Image (cartoon, rainbow, N blue to C red; front, top):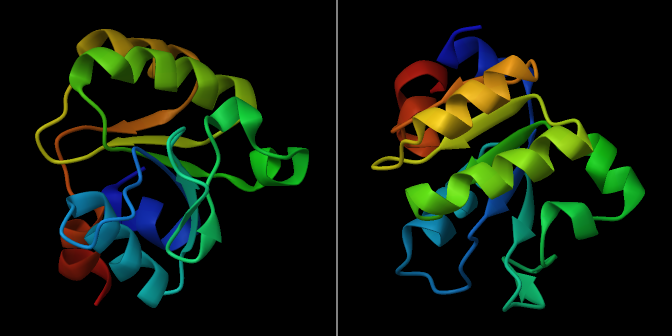
Length: 134
Protein backbone atom coordinates (compact mmCIF):
# COMPACT_ATOMS: atom_id res chain seq x y z
CA UNK A 1 0.00 0.00 0.00
CA UNK A 2 1.38 3.41 -0.96
CA UNK A 3 1.51 6.46 1.30
CA UNK A 4 -1.37 8.18 -0.55
CA UNK A 5 -3.45 4.98 -0.21
CA UNK A 6 -2.70 4.79 3.52
CA UNK A 7 -3.75 8.41 4.03
CA UNK A 8 -6.96 7.98 2.04
CA UNK A 9 -7.91 4.64 3.62
CA UNK A 10 -7.18 5.05 7.32
CA UNK A 11 -8.59 7.91 9.41
CA UNK A 12 -7.95 7.04 13.09
CA UNK A 13 -4.43 7.84 14.31
CA UNK A 14 -2.99 7.06 17.74
CA UNK A 15 -0.12 9.49 18.34
CA UNK A 16 2.48 7.97 20.65
CA UNK A 17 4.50 10.76 22.19
CA UNK A 18 1.73 13.35 21.86
CA UNK A 19 2.63 16.71 23.38
CA UNK A 20 0.31 19.37 24.76
CA UNK A 21 2.84 22.10 23.86
CA UNK A 22 1.96 23.97 20.63
CA UNK A 23 5.64 24.40 19.71
CA UNK A 24 6.25 20.63 19.60
CA UNK A 25 6.06 18.76 16.27
CA UNK A 26 3.60 16.15 17.62
CA UNK A 27 1.17 18.91 18.58
CA UNK A 28 1.36 20.72 15.23
CA UNK A 29 1.13 17.51 13.20
CA UNK A 30 -1.84 16.22 15.20
CA UNK A 31 -3.66 19.55 14.91
CA UNK A 32 -3.08 19.55 11.16
CA UNK A 33 -4.37 15.99 10.78
CA UNK A 34 -7.44 16.76 12.94
CA UNK A 35 -8.18 19.81 10.77
CA UNK A 36 -8.17 17.49 7.76
CA UNK A 37 -10.74 15.06 9.14
CA UNK A 38 -8.60 12.51 10.98
CA UNK A 39 -9.42 11.34 14.48
CA UNK A 40 -6.44 11.70 16.82
CA UNK A 41 -6.01 9.49 19.89
CA UNK A 42 -3.25 11.02 22.06
CA UNK A 43 -0.86 8.65 23.87
CA UNK A 44 1.41 10.03 26.60
CA UNK A 45 1.71 8.69 30.17
CA UNK A 46 2.42 12.20 31.49
CA UNK A 47 -0.75 13.91 30.21
CA UNK A 48 -4.45 13.65 31.04
CA UNK A 49 -5.56 15.55 27.93
CA UNK A 50 -4.05 16.85 24.70
CA UNK A 51 -5.77 18.73 21.89
CA UNK A 52 -8.97 18.71 23.98
CA UNK A 53 -8.96 14.89 23.81
CA UNK A 54 -8.44 12.38 26.62
CA UNK A 55 -4.82 11.24 26.63
CA UNK A 56 -3.97 7.61 27.41
CA UNK A 57 -0.76 6.27 29.01
CA UNK A 58 -0.20 3.59 26.34
CA UNK A 59 -1.89 1.82 23.45
CA UNK A 60 -2.66 -1.10 25.76
CA UNK A 61 -4.54 1.20 28.14
CA UNK A 62 -7.00 2.36 25.49
CA UNK A 63 -10.63 1.41 26.07
CA UNK A 64 -11.63 -1.61 24.01
CA UNK A 65 -13.65 0.38 21.44
CA UNK A 66 -10.69 2.71 20.80
CA UNK A 67 -8.27 -0.21 20.54
CA UNK A 68 -10.39 -1.58 17.72
CA UNK A 69 -10.70 1.84 16.07
CA UNK A 70 -6.99 2.74 15.86
CA UNK A 71 -5.65 2.19 12.36
CA UNK A 72 -2.39 4.17 12.23
CA UNK A 73 0.09 4.38 15.11
CA UNK A 74 2.08 7.56 14.53
CA UNK A 75 5.27 7.46 16.60
CA UNK A 76 7.05 10.52 18.03
CA UNK A 77 9.54 8.60 20.22
CA UNK A 78 13.25 7.86 20.11
CA UNK A 79 14.17 5.05 17.69
CA UNK A 80 15.17 2.74 20.56
CA UNK A 81 11.64 3.05 22.01
CA UNK A 82 9.86 2.10 18.78
CA UNK A 83 9.99 -1.70 19.19
CA UNK A 84 7.93 -1.57 22.39
CA UNK A 85 5.36 0.63 20.63
CA UNK A 86 5.23 -1.83 17.73
CA UNK A 87 4.54 -4.67 20.18
CA UNK A 88 1.57 -2.73 21.56
CA UNK A 89 0.35 -1.78 18.07
CA UNK A 90 0.38 -5.45 17.04
CA UNK A 91 -1.55 -6.37 20.17
CA UNK A 92 -4.33 -3.82 19.56
CA UNK A 93 -4.65 -4.75 15.88
CA UNK A 94 -3.38 -1.54 14.27
CA UNK A 95 -2.87 -1.56 10.49
CA UNK A 96 0.00 0.91 10.03
CA UNK A 97 3.14 1.90 11.93
CA UNK A 98 4.22 5.41 11.00
CA UNK A 99 7.60 6.58 12.30
CA UNK A 100 7.86 10.35 12.02
CA UNK A 101 10.62 12.23 10.23
CA UNK A 102 14.02 11.31 11.66
CA UNK A 103 12.84 8.02 13.18
CA UNK A 104 13.87 4.63 11.83
CA UNK A 105 14.19 1.25 13.49
CA UNK A 106 14.85 -1.76 11.27
CA UNK A 107 14.19 -4.34 13.99
CA UNK A 108 10.81 -2.77 14.71
CA UNK A 109 10.03 -2.53 10.98
CA UNK A 110 10.72 -6.24 10.46
CA UNK A 111 8.65 -7.19 13.51
CA UNK A 112 5.70 -5.07 12.36
CA UNK A 113 5.84 -6.32 8.77
CA UNK A 114 6.08 -9.93 9.93
CA UNK A 115 2.88 -9.32 11.92
CA UNK A 116 1.19 -7.96 8.78
CA UNK A 117 1.39 -4.22 9.48
CA UNK A 118 2.33 -1.63 6.88
CA UNK A 119 5.38 0.40 7.93
CA UNK A 120 6.40 3.94 7.00
CA UNK A 121 9.70 5.24 8.39
CA UNK A 122 11.31 8.67 8.42
CA UNK A 123 8.27 10.51 7.01
CA UNK A 124 6.12 13.30 8.40
CA UNK A 125 2.48 12.28 8.05
CA UNK A 126 1.39 15.94 7.74
CA UNK A 127 3.93 16.71 5.00
CA UNK A 128 2.88 13.59 3.10
CA UNK A 129 -0.77 14.54 3.53
CA UNK A 130 0.00 17.97 2.00
CA UNK A 131 1.87 16.30 -0.87
CA UNK A 132 -0.69 13.64 -1.72
CA UNK A 133 -4.09 14.64 -0.36
CA UNK A 134 -4.50 18.42 -0.64
